[in-house]
Every structure is written in structure tokens, then in C-alpha cells.
Length: 297
Length: 261
Ligand SMILES: Nc1ncnc2c1ncn2[C@@H]1O[C@H](COP(=O)(O)OP(=O)(O)O)[C@@H](O)[C@H]1O
Ligand SMILES: [Mg+2]
Image (cartoon, rainbow over all chains, first blue to last red; front, side, top):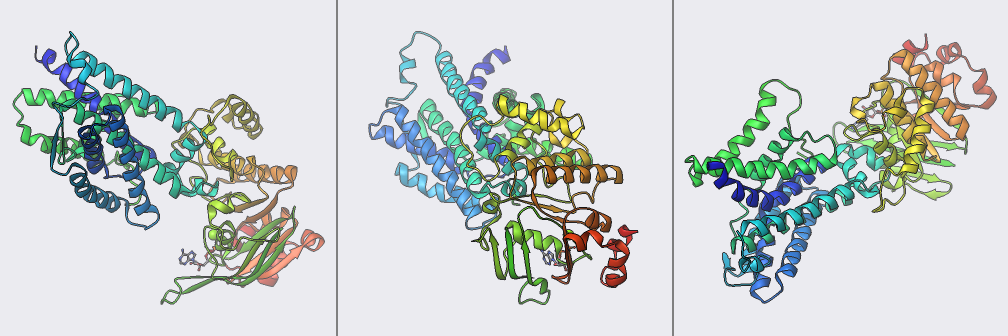
């Protein structure tokens, strides 16, 4: 009974946020770069899309523009780190902070309502079926496409070099790869996914808010940790799959928690504790390596 | 082929810890030369390879490859001329990636990497054949992660990766030192075969005097950042461990000496 009620909403939310988890998997896992831009690039995608929709731009184009904005933001974080030699965590925090102002500028205020505007999801309202069905199918299609593209990309000559940048930077430089460029591109792609997620979610929920990215990193990390526990990420294909599964299961856990009386205000606390436990338990048990590979810290 | 003109490398310049690792060192290496490099700990051997490879920049002097000035070229640019194998097998391979992916990364040394499939069928077949030569059974483990391999297997793979793309210059830095004696000998024999079959110009640092004398056609001994002994051709072929020791025993007073006995 409880499950029946929470499954559709968790599935919708989980798939909607899966692109954030996918992006985080790309930076934290593949590039071994702890990128915190996400908290800013997620609302950036929403802000760009919402503003453009209000200006009368086609909602699909608006989402793509949001994606592009995320790509640029990610690249900028990469440039701060590789060209200006700013510590990776700090580069992400700087970008995230700057984006807060940028997002306010883009929207012109803290919040844009889209309820009476055409969105990618508008055609579904007219359909004679439960809204969840087409919405979930749309998200599934987008995620399938993004996952497929990521898997293919990571297996190309350039994609392999990008993987090696996260694994053994000195080695791949010695084989002629400018790892600075690879890092910038990788961060760009990751944040493009995150911003696309923000653009779609803003349209799905009917508003864009400057604060909607707060805690996105931690939620994304929780998702990939859960996903990797369920799907052993032995290769790229499984790594991206784990991110998506993890995102859905994370939203399911949250939805059940809320139903069971978890106060919505305590959500971020609960998520944070979840991540701390997942990261901390291996260290506490005396295992040599923690779960997260961090580079540049 | 490779020309070093009075190169100087100073670490921690203008501080209390200033250290002159290379001092006005000059060296001329011909195409096809196999140069072995010995010298006591801290003599500057690794630094020499680092500046040639572009991982470190010299403070003074010039580096030329076939007359082209590459003094300021960073490592990823120098990669089009050379490949390296290090003492630590972990440095030369990507642990979380598979054997075939590592070979693919290496095959494209110094080339543009494109948005096309990396490990193609044709490439995989080639890798199989090359791995079979190692005799370690790796040809049946193409999809295994390199992190699963032993040190010796990883180092053999690293060697194969470095020579796969036929570098004009091969740099080896005590690449057998971390292996057990049997494996070290196997890897060294393999190295010699690969170098000779492909006529690769090679710089090999070793702390094993026998290796330095038995292999290659040119030996240099470094001391305090400069070349103390430079023997080539016939003179090198005739040189014995005892001769080197009686002449330079003082300056080689450490592991180099131990390994020579
Ligand atoms: N990164 C560094 N910073 C400071 N000093 C260094 C550094 N690398 C090497 N050195 C010093 O330079 C000298 C030469 O080192 P190296 O080339 O590694 O010697 P080796 O002949 O044993 O390979 C040594 O005295 C060493 O302590
Ligand atoms: Mg050394």
C-alpha cells in the first residue's frame, strides 16, 4: 500500500535526478575530480530554461540552452583548477558561489513560475492517462540516451584518455594527452548533464528556484554510493547504470522516510548522515581505501 | 638523435634546500644507440630522464631531438618522440582499466585521440599476438583490469605499452629494480629483445652494474649531476665490473656496488 503510493513519485524523481548522479559519477568516479559545481549548475540549467520559456522560447530549445550553460560552467571550474591551479574543491565552491549570483541575474528574481507556460511536459496534461506514465517515459528516454552516449563516449579513443586521466594522470600525459584539456572537457560534460536535469525538473515541477541546487552534490553522492552497492561498477556500462539505479533507490528511500514521518526539513541531514556512514564505515573498519577517489585535494 | 647541451637542473632554486641535480651536462646520442646509465644514489639519473621526457624543465641548456629544439616541450608534447618505463610498475599502467584499454591508450601515444571506438576488433587481435610473446598468459585476459596483475606482469605490460608504438626514443628508469630476481631477468631479456628487434634508441638507468655492462653499446656513469665516465663501442664491450670498481669504487659506494658483486 505504502509502496504503491511512493513508487511512481520515486520513479519520477529518481529518473529526473538520475542525470545529476550520472554527472557526479563522471567527475568523482571517472575523472576522480571532486567537483562541487553541481549545486550551482543544477539551478543554472533551471534558470536558463525558465527564463527562456518566459521569453517565449521553445521549451526543448530552452532545456538545451540550459544544458549548454551547464557545460560552460563545468569547463570554467576545470579552467580554474587546471590553468589557475586552484584546488579542485575550492574551484567548485567558487564556481557554485558565483553561479548563485549568475542564476539570480538570469532569472531577474529568486523564482520563476512556469505553471501557465508551455513546457516539454504540457502535452501530457491533455492526455487521458495518469500523468506519471508519460512523464516517467520521457525521463526514461532522455536518461537512456544520455547513458548510451556516455558509455559510447567513454569507450572512444578520447574517452579512454579521459578515463586514464582520472586513473593515472602521469601515465597518460607520458602517452601524449594534455590532461588539463581532458579534465576541462570532462567537467563540462558532467555539468551539462546536471544542468539538463535542472532544466527538465524546473519544467516538470512548474517553477525554477535559485535555491533548488542546495545539497545536490550530497544527494548525488548518496545516489551513486547506493547504486554502486547494488550494481558492482565493474565497467563503464555498469558504472553509469549504477548511478541511475542509485538515484531511483535513493528517492525511494527518501519517499518512504517521508511517509514514515521524517520531517522534510531533516531531509538533507538524513542524506548527509547516509553519505557519512557509507564513506566512513570502510575507514572505521580499517580498510585501506575509502570509497571515494579524490584527486587534487 | 638526442642532443643535450650543457643542461643544468636546480631544485628549490634560491632556497636553503637548493640542490643542483644536473650540472652543465652534455651528451650526444646517435639513432640506434642503447645507452646504459649508472651512478650512485642521487647522482641525477632520474632527473636526467625527467628533463629529457619533459616532466621537468631545465634551468639552463638546450635539448634537441634530431636538431629540433624541444627544451621547453612539456611531457605530453615530448610523448610524440619518446616513451618511458619507470621503476614502479604502478606508474606505467592504469590499474582500473583493462589490459586492452591500457594497450589502446599506449598505441595512440603522441597521436590525436578521436571520437571513434577505441579497442576495435583489429586492435584487439594485434594486442593478443603481442601479449602472447610475453608468455605470461595475458593474451587470454584482455578484459581483466590491470590492477589484478602481479608486479612483474604489470611491468612486462608497461614495457610492451611503451614499445607498442615504436618510440624514436625509449627511456627506462630502473624498470627491473622492483621485481624479484627471476622476473627482473625475464623482463630485462624481453627488453633487450624488443630494443634490438626494433632498433630502438634507448636510455636505460640501472643500478645493476652487470646489466649496465652486458647490455647496450654505450655506457655513461653520472656523478653529482655530470658525466664521469662515457664509454662506447669496443671500449665498452671490453670493460669489466672490476675495472669500473677499481677506478670509481669511491663514488659508487652504495647499492650500485652491492649489486655488482
Ligand atoms: N623533486 C625534487 N625536489 C628536490 N630535490 C630533488 C627532487 N628530485 C630529486 N632531487 C634531488 O636531486 C638529486 C638527484 O636525484 P635523482 O635524479 O632522483 O637521483 P638518482 O640518480 O638516484 O635517480 C638528489 O640529490 C635528489 O635528492
Ligand atoms: Mg632514480
